Amino acid sequence: MVIIVGLGNPGRSYSRTRHNIGFRVIDLLVKKYEPAESWKRKFFLAWQLAIGDRRFIAAKGRTFMNESGLPVQSLCTSFRATPQDLVIVYDDVNLPLGKIRIRRKGSSGGHKGIKSIIETLGTEEFIRIKLGIGEPESGENLVEYVLSEFRREEIKTVSTMLEQATDAIRCILTEGIDRAMTLYNG
Image (cartoon, rainbow, N blue to C red; front, side, top):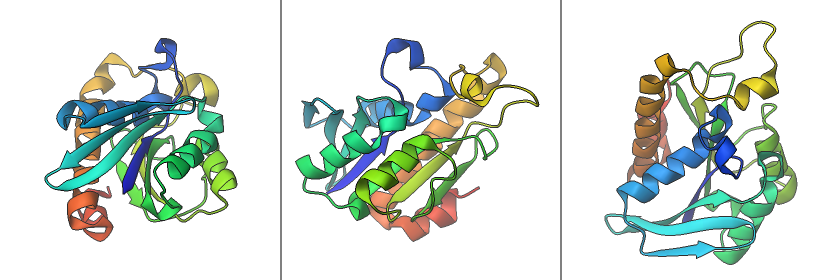
């Protein structure tokens, strides 16, 4: 079964930050597709969803971003999944705000959550959906930037990107990654 994992940090103080865009995609999936079942475990929250007859798991880790490998490994163990069953959704400062990039595999690109997953699973072979959050302005601290909320003038672009991300996930599940990459890679 495919497991869609949104990366982010737990806690209300992080809920609207740039770094938590992956969590927001999961929230939108859970809202769009009524959960048949849900789980609350030490390292993750998960919901069983379906698009048509295609069932999948949507999940959020309960660790901080830099320790994302723990919940992902726990999800794989709990649902008898392999890294090839994963789709990881996360923020990318190297993409312009609103852009989506889907990849079959790859390095961490400096993203510490992805680095943790690669180190924990021992492979780079998992699908990822990168969501562009833009880059900090010259002289702005990267950590402060990713932990900041989107500006008012960015909200519409972010909302559109969240919808596109859920559409891309639907496409991956129903038509395959090649079709999703063709349609959604900006």
